[in-house]
Length: 380
Ligand code: LLP
View (tube, rainbow, N blue to C red):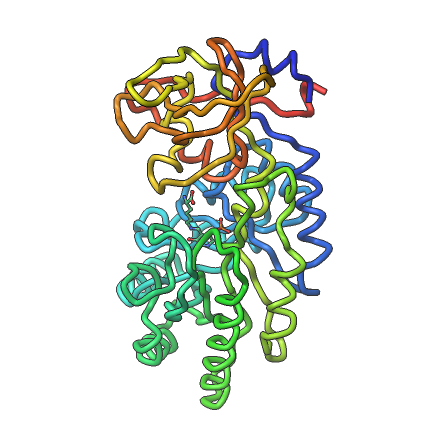
């Protein structure tokens, strides 16, 4: 990546390393279980050019809104590889998804199931559905991004599942294809996935005994990335992740296994590039005030997330800064006591591991502009 191009660019901007994205996609396809389908979770990053590269790798899409479905289809993902999750699907979104003949609705409540049935009936079609099960598996991740515990709003509680399965089977305009799970995000220890496999196996035996056949098992996404030393681990351990499912999950005949990976595919290929506006000495700390803010990358402000920050303009000395943005909120801080070389006005800082939930969560609070975007393909 040419430093002078970055230094001359208008900041803040997202810079995507497309070669790294391609290598990550290759690592996914090389290690995913034979016959499985990976549905890329668009919420992590729905930039059109990123989507095009992902489509090229043959992935499906995991969508959480009507607009995400539209983007996936426009990018060239075929409808039979699109799945649709989310606790609050509107009638309009359901009608649109049905009209496009998507592969599966991951249904999160009884009432949603009934509404899908009604709308499918109006359209004269049968909706393919899977029930999203809350399996009570602790993903040991940030409480804002854990989803598989009984206190979470997601999924149907495992204790209520039998009843909902019966209701689904009785409805005329839905076809129960299988079960869906997603236990959380930024999961770095693989143990929760082993527990998930055990839960899925138990449920499978239960329903097989009752003669219920299912062809769709979706275990969601959530594989974490290395935010502390991203240069050492630019590609997540896909082989380890998929290996758990290969060794622990007992699929039945005719079943297809589905995954919904987002962060692990796109996170390390994106950097947020920002320029130092001012160095300000406080009473007991020094602030590096940069031109990117929480509006461009919300994760630190929202979750206290830490992203590695480097100064690419300077290498002399060792100092400590609170790297903060210009937005009128105290939480607009990318890191406290960040060790950097001597930093001055005009220096370029890069905030790493920003390819997932960065650009896609950007907003315009304080009437700020959205960040710019550059691809390595265009500047190398
Ligand atoms: N499937 C479902 C049903 C999900 O809710 C999610 C993410 C995914 C798949 C993809 O998960 P991934 O592989 O990306 O971990 N904004 C937060 C993350 C929110 C994740 C929401 N659900 C963050 O910046 O950490």
